[in-house]
Length: 316
Length: 316
Image (tube, rainbow over all chains, first blue to last red):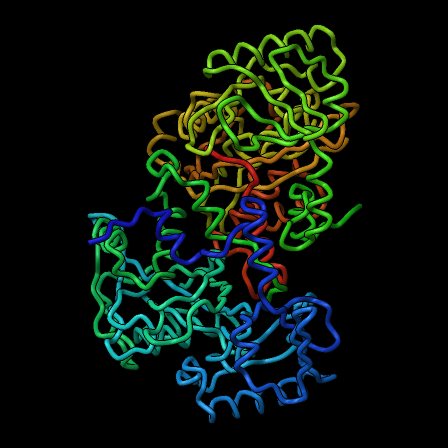
């Protein structure tokens, strides 16, 4: 059985090198990728693997420049760009070359420009092909008891596409284009834990964000493409729930919920039982609530910084 | 009267370029500095201005390499290195060339290596000459009232060396070598706000760190050297205080304390009335307490990331 330190848990999700720490490794890695651009914006919006550039069938709404290593999506308006991406990806889904597209979600993820406007929307399952920043929400449902805080922890269904059977956060999910973080929390809290909307609206507390830059490996979805880039930003919420409330899954995504003590949660984290980014949200929760402290955690500063990575790309 | 956005407030303290955002500006800036090293460790421990290298009188316990732009402190043990720095700086203080040394504190700041051990201790007033990471604590004392949270805000004495007359955090201070963050909180809470040690030990809640990379300008201490580098890391604490407790300064550092509502604090922040890094601690407090939210703050993600910058140098 592996034993992960808290810093190990962070490193499982935040795997891209830091330029200020490893300037050469960083520059080499970045130079190896194609940069994703859209017409009318100079910013790099994501990193694309050479293998993806080679294997994807790019219709002429794209301009692929192998010398400059850029992939440019044409389209003067967002609507045009949305249409161009949708057509490209529908053909790829049909062709079934990329395993990752078998997890098609029919859900659009936004790509933001430097002025925080949406430049284009991309099918969720394809987001990692473009290495764009994806956004989600995570909420920790906790109960104050005489024995200290306890946390409601669900186990993911064994048939979930990603991280089957692993422990999860009380509520979590991706933010689809056009939805606000708070709207997503209210919707997911109802779907995943049967938490009444009125209660969530009144009591969910926004507590910051977590961000990290992952490189996708076999753990996510066995058999899928590896090495894809996944910069992510999660909006973090806390929700104190009444002692007599028992969450239950409303949508088959979770098997069951258990109310765990902090030591039980920490033991499961150290055993690698949590979905990797959920361990990060819990670490952030422990840090904000004075459970993990500078005196008790030798890697405290590094952990706090790496839980809030400044990403390479424009953000929401 | 200026009006600062929350992101403006962050930018006032976090002024060093980000390598992932402005790679050329970053590389150019870093290439312009001398790198501070100590014998027996490969890590760069701070950035030194060429003007400092030129003006400081380096005895032969230092090896200055103008080609490689390095400044190496000799000494096989920490004790030797401490002694060598102390002798050098005592002579500089006597010579009185550097204005910044007129703020001599008789307080040592630690410099950490990659294994988190202390490599050398340096007089606090000289820390910015070497551009080393400095550590401090900040605690926000707040009261829960029927009208929402209120915060105890002191005004700095008009004769303070740095940021005279500006608004400050309830409790704050530098961590001297050998002191833990929590010991510092307890000591400073007594000195600065007459908060009883027993109450602080029981109720102060550790809530993370804030880190940023500042470039020192005239605001800090009028008439002093400018352009000096100041990477800082602050341990953050919250303290709920009883409604009937009134903090009072015990050490002449503050003029008075006032209990301000959140809108009053935010207005003073926007007016630039707070010591610059105190505004950052308050922003972090507002984010953790759901007062500043993703829906209400367009720069939310950038602010959260920049409040937790991963610094270039090994840390505590």
